[in-house]
Image (cartoon, rainbow, N blue to C red):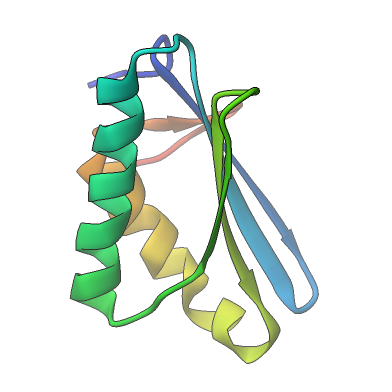
Length: 96
């Protein structure tokens, strides 16, 4: 399912840092809640708790890993994309 019209996902990875930006296209609080619930489910599944930043003005949630934890972020991001039924990450295609 392609949800790029509802949620735009992009990933940025650098040395000792990895982050995912999830921007939702409208001010629908149900969509924001769905993203937060998906993050909570993945946190429980993986036993990893990244830093979460919420920018209500830009309708964006940021999921960030720093230091040594970022080694495990790839699997976390893949699970989160599957939970949200997102098959594309900005310009790349994600295949579960």
